[in-house]
Image 1 (tube, rainbow, N blue to C red):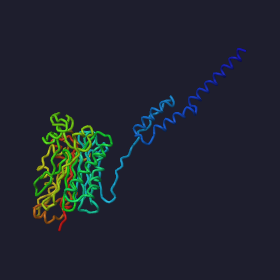
Image 2 (cartoon, rainbow, N blue to C red):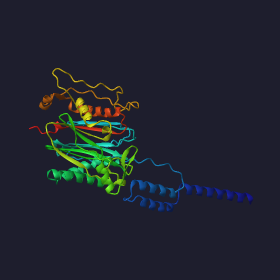
Image 3 (cartoon, one colour):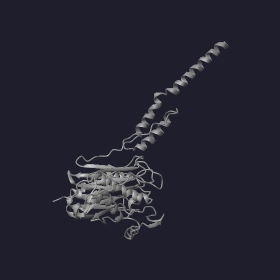
Image 4 (cartoon, rainbow, N blue to C red):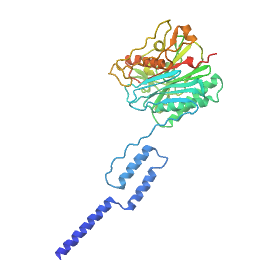
Length: 419
């Protein structure tokens, strides 16, 4: 009997062990009924991706006690919507490895370089052949702060909102109000995102015989008119007395912090798109200037404050003209800029010497009558514009700029109607 009892006990123990293992590896179906219901609740369409992931994580913890591997990181692609009728370029510089960005096409060139921050916060937009007309275009430079989301959003949406508003406008006053409405709509749409970042803006609309320039914050537009710099925008900063008075009248305050006047001690600009935490005082209403496009208007520089903090208006015009235009002397050749010692323009050189190599210029084309009269001729239309942009960025870098820098140069002669 003892041996039989022992055998029965061993059999019972074996059966119990097998049952325990089976239960552990294959839980009852009822155990998953509640879990499935909870998972269905966690992935309702109205929830965000982040809340869905959090809900699934907490729900999964109650299902089984088995240790599981962490799921792979979700990759969410960034999709840029295109306007089929126009040639459009939006650049958001989202990749961390993008230290420099350059782009050019007939009549416009742009160059950007990332500063000391981990992510480039500058973006830009180029819409050429507006409504199928090669003499029309929309151009913008956007300087983000507190993150890149605001400048990304602006680069993708501001021109769409402005162009939509312009469809029903009449006259210069109507155009100015339409542009203002486009800025405000973009601001309202971004605020609905619930994000805290903001963006300064400067835009230029070239349309028929006019150019229309608008700005928010400290991005700036400077015109070269007969070799003389003409600022078409005025920076919206907290150090401006009229802006300080406006903010204080609305119950806000401006104070000096870290050597600069700042709204509530935080933001140095007084107008921008976004900045929801300061929206009662930070306006999204742009200043707009409309000018007739005349033969003495040579080119327009749009740039973020990374340039203007180190280079004044006239010096920027002189530098760009020196690179983009060369003396038109009989039998003379263009003095091409030498290659920089650091060679690769996409590799950051040693500290305190952040320079960008200039691409060699192509052979100059035959000059127009206007250029012959002025005593200058252009370099290659595209290569010259990029080189001029790079030279301005170089100038700011050698003077210690650590900010993101974006420079866009628009050759107005390309868009001017010749009659």
